[in-house]
View 1 (cartoon, rainbow, N blue to C red):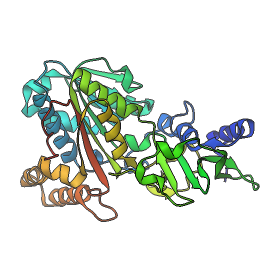
View 2: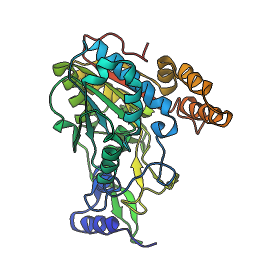
View 3: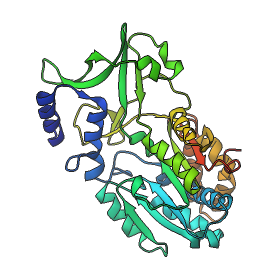
View 4: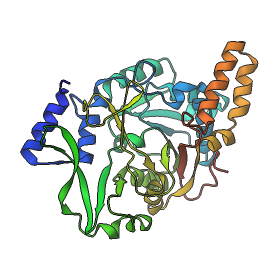
Amino acid sequence: MAQSPLELEIRKRIKLAGPMPVRQFMTLCLTHPDHGYYTTRDPLGAGGDFVTSPEISQVFGELIGLWAASAWHMMGEPENVRLIELGPGRGTMLIDALRAAQVVPAFRAAIVLHLVEVNPKLREKQQQSLGTLDVPSMWHETFEEVPDGPAIILANEFFDALPINQAIKQFNGWYERVVEIDGSDSLVFGISNEVIPLFDQLVPAAVRDAPVGAIYEWRTDNLALGIGQRMVRQGGAALIVDYGHTRSSTGETLQAVGGHAFVNPLISPGEVDLTAHVDFEAIALAAESMGARIHGPVDQARLLRNLGIDKRAAALKAYASPDKAVEIDEACKRLLGETRTGMGKLFKAIAISHPDHGTMPGFE
């Protein structure tokens, strides 16, 4: 198999500097300016590599829009609120959310959209799809670029694509997991030569007694810290929906997807999507350390049911053709399902808010 352009560069870096930490490998694969997966293509939809909840059903985005309107009310209905989406895809969720928000005209009028997007192809599609709406819109490379002020933050399937660190437990401590070149000239996973100092004191208590060979994954929590800090200092609420686990634990979850199928993450770097499960406990602890209030996490199915997915689906079906009604049912089944192909249990939701807010909608 021919090596991808990014693989050639990764091999060159490894030969010059030695084995590459998993986090650096994942960062290059996803955001390399010339060959990164998220900087060179539209990965969504049937013609891409995966489908997200907003692409499955308009109901998802509409419920998120109503959640945002309720959050705005709990914030005291500021006249100017930044509605921020991290990784907006094609803008599908925002379009559905803004349509639902029309039932609260004052909220709709208060919104200024801020889209955090690194993918130039998706940014272009977002500008086309949102350009017809009468809502001011701004784009940013990072969350930190968004101007100060009250904010409602939405992040659907965003955190899973943030690069992870990996460490492997050995009899004398934890070693960082790396990508290296083996004797047959293949990219393989390996371990660093030096133990990570004092690592047992840094990992969660539930991880310290892990057996030899266990893998622990973690992300730097700068984004969660920043969200928590912003909620406390400037007011607002954030909703994070993603697949992952509610408690920090060991286990490898790094995976690659290409053409809607799982593939080897070391094959064709930059041309397949790399993700890993989200540690919701780590997000909660980081935001909470800034003084923010945490709501959840709860399963996606519980969130959507609490927000009224059944009533909204029934309302849509009342005016739909029989075939369309079946589509609505199938879409909701996938969003709520607990089977292997369902998203209801695998996906979780957590909200972060100003400490003075009551329980956020959907988390009752």
